[in-house]
Length: 435
Image (cartoon, rainbow, N blue to C red; front, top):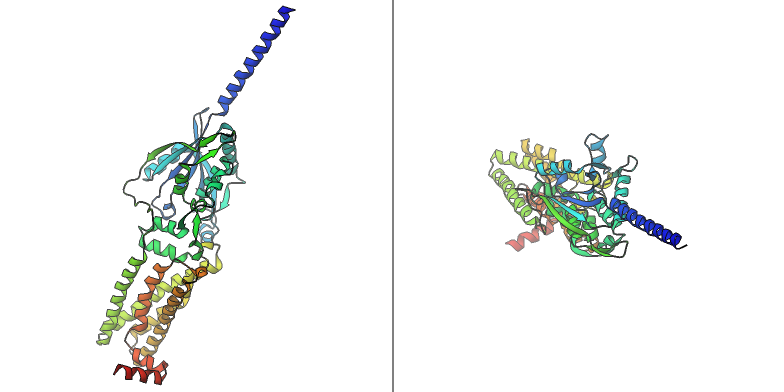
């Protein structure tokens, strides 16, 4: 009896030890995953100016590293440029070898920082399964949105999944006072032409203070926020999300991303004033009966009308016919309209005509076209006093106003035009007050 009891005890102890060994062994196998976030800095091409981000999953059981990329697109896609123009750009999620991707970013002189996440084994598997599900053919495609659905917001949402909603809870109501336009300009300032063009097309819908959660449409903002973030894991343990940060590469000679955007309107105003002074010189030469002055004045009005008119066409097209919702409610439509295109042929006619009567007619028509722009700019400035209509477009107004004023108030035929359209009583009172 005693022998039998001892044998049973030994068997139970053996089974318990075997169970513990199996549990430890399985736990070791389950914790073979490492979850990392790779944040890449800006690149050369325009669509890389805001940086990039990816999910990296390493598996120690077979020494593999995978790079889950949520920002894949191809110019070879069917109707790529047509869909891009109408705001229906199809992006994809894909997976490839991590080392190969990192080497590409190194060769193209991009900053690379890798954040290793401290997650329980169960959460790591959850993240891996979610990422694998994303890259399946039936799930990998999505319609890209620069601010609301891109490579960065998708990684942000995965981090929120891994922290059981705590990441969003922490940042969805906090603000820094920045707008989406502020963040765009932090990355575009070094190219004045692209900076002006992109911001000219974007409307007042991006001029409200956004939350930190919304700011994470930028990869760098995701990296900044996860660095010190803490959460409670599924086992009730308080953890720091990032266990280590590795700087894999640092770019050389690339323009830094600004902490705060510059006030670009000052430079736009200076540029416009210089350009307007040149145009005014053409009219001065014309007044001195120098033929080249009239030709240059007409060509300058023609080219200016062509440029701003084409921009106006694009502005109206993006507002009325596309899904680019960040271009909606654009107050620039008041003063930069397709009507300015009419100045192109009239300006040429002004330059080449030898008939003084026709010259007067072309001058009046051109003056009227540019006067409408001046009035539109004044109205748009007054509308800014109403919070519901506020748009951060001083750069656009300061670029157009001096040019439009120069063409409106140019001295050739100004007195004749005023005498023709203003009441005689008003002109007489003006003459008396000036005598």
